[in-house]
Length: 379
Ligand code: CP3
Image (cartoon, rainbow, N blue to C red):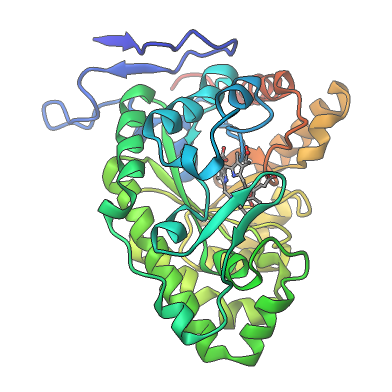
């Protein structure tokens, strides 16, 4: 029996997928159940299998573009909201209800596991993560403790609640990759040039590798908690890796990202994403991704040539295009859908996160348009 989960019709979106099957995802008569998140258009595209349409979700779909998000976050600091499972659940569901996206992404932040590992930091509105004592020495690295489920029990609980609420809609878990986390820890906050990070990387490679190895352990453990709690896929955000040449990426970053993605095994699809990574797409795929995220600078057919035929792609609408008149948005969505057909699997997304000033109605229209353009007859 299918039951529409409570609250599924509260939003204005075209929600159809928010159903809970009381049999869960358990096998029936030894046969895997059809339906359920593992058989969703999103997971199928990640696995390069045909599906009913090209799936769509948006990085930062849960966030300040939504009035219901701004309202619920009004008096709750960012890190605190990430540690309250009932808030995490509600915020994660908001864009699914409103837009009818094909996947939810856990509401959290890349610095949540680092804070759980003992690093003193905060997320400052309008700025981003700010670290009280930036990492400079081997002793600073030693103070980053390993984490387990008990250190992030709020994430475990939120994922378990969400899996029930979402029914057939998959939930994406995520973490920050070692380079991007290291950049925040070494700079002490967001940086345009990553100058201190690179100075440490080039000037003290042993300390750099020790820091990244420690961060890789924390990240792997954090993703494993989410997988054990039931997420259907994970995304490793190496947002700032595009600051590096391919040679430096391969030497200073790839071994650590490979440790994380390889350590997870192939149980759920692994998405690996960065910004400005046109020159790194092949190497990022080699780190152990099933899906490589592409920003707006590289057309998806070109990206597929660089990544190879054994991986799906995700992307790549420029988030600023959503601020343009609808005919411009529509033309760009059509172009990306066409270029995505060159890939063995395509998950439609933006090339980076939704900007806070985006009109949410436009996001809803993009979801409907991609579904319409890519609808395939039932087989
Ligand atoms: O919907 C989703 O995508 C899930 C939520 C999510 C957040 N952060 C919530 C958030 C995800 C996936 C992240 C990851 C994250 N956080 C990344 C990697 C993705 C990327 O954007 O490249 C990075 C680099 C961070 C670090 C970070 N946290 C930044 C740069 C900021 C923005 C600062 C600001 O105020 O503009 C944050 C804060 C943050 N994380 C917000 C949200 C919704 C905004 C805080 C708020 O709403 O007050």
